[in-house]
Figure 1 (cartoon, rainbow, N blue to C red):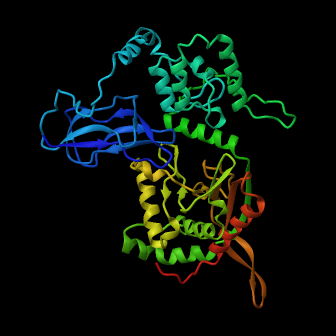
Figure 2: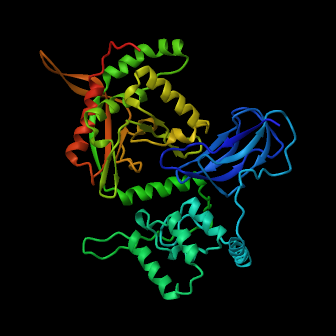
Figure 3: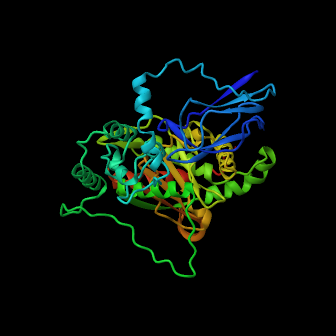
Length: 449
C-alpha cells in the first residue's frame, strides 16, 4: 500500500506544538488533495491541516485533545485506495519500557481515573492563563484546578510552563509537599501576577461580578474569542501603552487610486485598495527607524532583522486575525497588492496556513474600514508598536503654494500609533508616525503599477 505521512506543519518560530481539536475526516474516508482533514489549536490561533494528496485516511495517530509537536506524523493517507490497516505501525517504537516504568505508569491509574473528568479552565481564579499543553498534562495526570493554581510558574507573569508542571508531577508523591507549602505557593503565584501600586502595595485584579437579568441571554465565547481576550489583557498588563496621532493629507493617493483602479482590475482581475499603499509607507519608515521593529525579552531588546508587517483582518464571525506579510520591504506595490488581497481573502475563508499568522514584527489595523477616524489599538505581543489608519474624509485645509496659502478640499486621514513605552519613547514613537505620514503625502500621483 502506498502511504503518505501527514505531518504537523511548522507554525512559526515561537510555536512548537498544537492541540488536536477536531478531526474533519474519519478513518476509511476518501480525502482530496489540499482538503482539510483536521483542526488544530495553539495558544495563538485555530487552524486546519490539509491533506498533501488524494487518497483514503487510513490512520489517525493523535486523538482529539492530544498534543502533537511540529513535525510529528498525525495521520496516514493511502494513495492507492487500499482499505485501512488494522494493525498499528510500531516500527518507530524501538524501545521497550522497563518494569520500573511500567509500574510507575500502572500504579496511579485508579487515582487518575477518579478525577480525569475534572475541568481544567484556561484561566484560573487567580487570573493566570494556562496553555493547552499545560491543561492537557494536568488532565492526563489528574491534577485538579486547585493544585494547578498552587504550582509556582517560571514563565512570564508567573505562568506555569511545561517544565514546571512536569517537575510538579515528578515530586507530587513526595509527602514533603504539605498543605502549608501549597498555600505558600499560592501566595507566590499571586505576587507573580499581581501588579504593584506606587506605594509598593500589591493590587489584586478581580473581574467584576455581573448580574444576569431575566431577559438576558448568556452566550459563551468561542475558542478564538477567548484567545483574543486573553492576549489583549496580557498585552495591556505587559506593555505601558502610549498613543501618538498625526493627520495626513492623502489626496494624491486617493486621486491616483481612482485613476488606476479600473484598469488594474481589468488587467489583474482584482481590486487595488489603500492597504498595500499604507503598508509600503510603514515598511519604508521602519527601514529609516528600526527602533520600532523590536521585541523585549526581559531586559534584552531584540532587534528584528526582517520587516514582517501584520494586517489585522475582521472575520465574518466577528473575530479578529492578523495575517503577516513577510519581508514587506522587499515587495513592490504590485507584489504588496497581490499579497494583501490573497491573505485577506483566505482569512475570510478560514484558509490561512499557521505560518502565515506568525512572525510579525509590526502590525497595522485599518479602523477606517468601519468609518472610525482614529483609534487606540492594543499592541500585538511580542511586538512593541501598532498603527491604526482611520477613515479618509474630505475636509477644508490650508494649501501652501509659491503664491501663498489658500483653502481647498483635501482628503485627510488620521494615523494613530500605539507603542510600548518601556522601549519606545515619545520622540521615536511620535517621529515614526510623522515619517509614515510624510511618505503618504509624498506619494507620486504619476506612479505606474
